[in-house]
Structure formats: C-alpha cells, structure tokens
Image 1 (cartoon, rainbow, N blue to C red):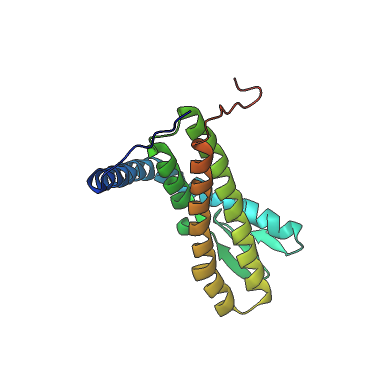
Image 2 (image 1 turned 135 degrees about the horizontal axis):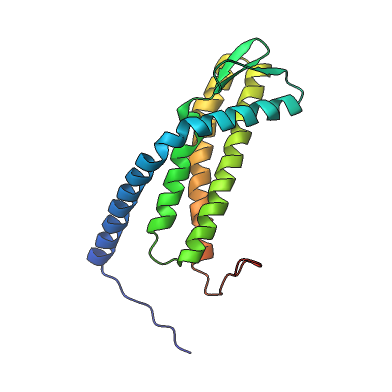
Length: 180
C-alpha cells in the first residue's frame, strides 16, 4: 500500500490559514452575539456552584442579594462576566466548528465534552482562587487569578483543541453506545 502525501505550496498553506482564521473569527463573533445574553445566567449558576463547592470544603458562605454574589467569611465575592468562562467556551466551540477535516459527529462530541471540561475546570479555578483569598494575602490571590489561572485556562483551551483535533483525525469510526 502506497501512501501519497499531498504537496501544498506555501501560498496555498497561507491561504488555508487565512481562511481558517477568518472563518474562526466570524463564527466566534456570531457565537458571542448569540450567547452573550446567557452570560448572566452562567454567572449565577457558577456563583451558586462555587458557593456550594466552598461550603462542601468547610468554608462558610452565605448568599447575597445579587445572585452573582455571595459572602465568604465577611468578604463579598462576585463572579464577574469575565470569570464565567463563556469566552473560552466560545473560542473552543468556534475552533471545533470551523475545522474542515472533522465530521459533524466528531464536532458534536468535541463540543459537548470540551465545553463540559472547560466548565468544570473553571469552577475548580474559581474555588482554588477563593480558597487562596481565604488563606493567603489578597495580592497573592490576585496575582494567581489574574495571571496564572488565566494562562492555564488559555493553555487548557489550546490543549483541549489539540487533543480533539488529534481524535478527530483518527480514521477509525467513533461510536457512542446508545447514541447510534
């Protein structure tokens, strides 16, 4: 069996890259426009789940009047729109959607699993940041939140996409039991 490699010129590769990036930006903008109205709902959901996580870890919390806020040992905590993880979910969804080599089935699987992983990781990130705020200085928690966890979230997004891209390029047919 002879495997033939497709020879692509630099010009063709550049055009493909530009097309991918342009399509990615258009899809990301459309998804951002469509899902931004859900951001406050996501903030509220994550505020409640973060509060429950902290409570389960023994950190006293209580609800505040605003559903995106809660009290933690006398400190008012607010889950801001940027902390919702919506932007990272949209970027991952956009990258998966515009990948031309993947089947629709693999795109759907990648979207569901990838967004779920990003969501869970974001809850973990918020919990760890708030635990640091509880047990360390505010400046340390702020540096961890502003730099370390944002970098980790972006690297996590890139890693999830790379793993999915590798999975989606597999020739073997992927079947979910009970779904086909």
